[in-house]
Image (tube, rainbow, N blue to C red; front, side):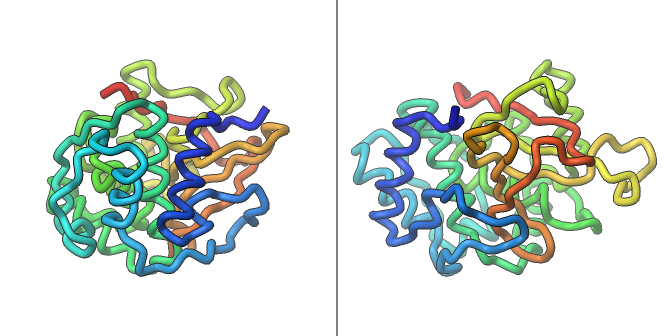
Amino acid sequence: MLQVHSRHVAIRLLLAVACGSAAIFAPAVARAGTAETTDPSLRCEIVEAALEDMVPGALAKTSQGADASISHASGTAQTPCSKDVAIARLLAVASSQAGITDGDRYQNAAIEAGSTFNGMGPCTAYVWWCFNAAGLSPCFMDGAATTYPHEVRDWYAARDAFEPKGSYTPQPGDIWLTDNPTGRPFPEASATHAGIVDHVSDDGQTIYCWEHVNGYVHLVAERADHETLIGYARPDFGC
């Protein structure tokens, strides 16, 4: 069964219409390593306006403009009207960044919020930024900023909110985590890459994730049996 709630689908489809971007409703025909065709100029204020139009008053609008939300994400929690809307909001923000090559913007925002620079890449900073820009900061490590995937894995594992590979069917909004020993910042690190689960194929064998990888943000079709996959962190969208 496709792991996308019907209300979640409806919300994202309406967002696609409102924002003029079919990429916000992620198609099942996405290919690994290819970018969606979203206009990179699409920013979070468009997403928030569309959500507000759909569910008036349900979502508090952020005070940042498009560029400000990239470089000065506040971490202030917004209150979605339901888990489905919260997840739709997160994925809409994630997809609004499709095609972005400047990963330093995510790292810089995370560093401003208290993290440190990760020389291995901006993947986790992008994940953190999406939660933050969507007004869901408390759902990501209780609002902590990080650029390191092993910190994400360890934080959720310590709270029984990490599901090992093969034990769980991921849900939209989960955090995809992999470990490649050659990419560890130190030998004992437990993870080396992170992304946000968008949806799962009908047969459960393909996990579509928003990732900053290979130099830009795009929707990647990942295998459920990916050799470096270690599992999924489960954010609490009831935060």
